[in-house]
Amino acid sequence: MQIPRGKAGKTLIAEVTRLIGLFNSSKRWESVAMHMLQALLPLLLWKPSHKSKNREHVKYLNKRMEWWKHGKLEELISECEAIQKRLKRSVKTKKESDQKAFCRLMLQGQVKQALKIVDHASDIDGKHDITTDIKKKLKEKHPNAVELKQSAIIDKPETETVIFENITQDDITSNTKNSSGSGGSKQIDMDT
Image (cartoon, rainbow, N blue to C red; front, side):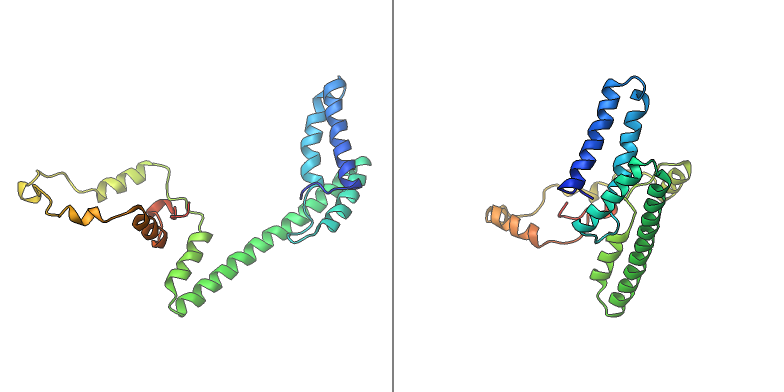
């Protein structure tokens, strides 16, 4: 969550300032002050739910600041773990709803929309680490080199230049905007 305005936000900023001051000025606390600061922000600024509002953020920040001041780290960690478990369940539910939507769209014959769901839900980034097994498979699929046949070479393309004279920047722009699809194995679409 973002740092709320008002008293709760000021209290958090004061604690952050105090920890930075301990790091800068106190030999005794210098070794742990930055570690405390790194733990403070994620623990205190964890959103209570995906759709929580600022009012709830203030309430939870005040409660967590009290726990922090009294050294009740077990309560802080326990609350954050409970929120994390809930987030994992929502990711699982999203995956299940994507599967249902894909099946529904395929049954309706809307293949393009169904594939969009697969593309957005996919964690494939289009590349693999090159291992000896992958190298072997690629070599098996690659054809052996052969001598070039002169009959396969076209000496001069038979296109008239007049075809290209009427192409304008506006033509290229409008045709580019109307094109669709992805960029192959990298799964980069034209909007990227």
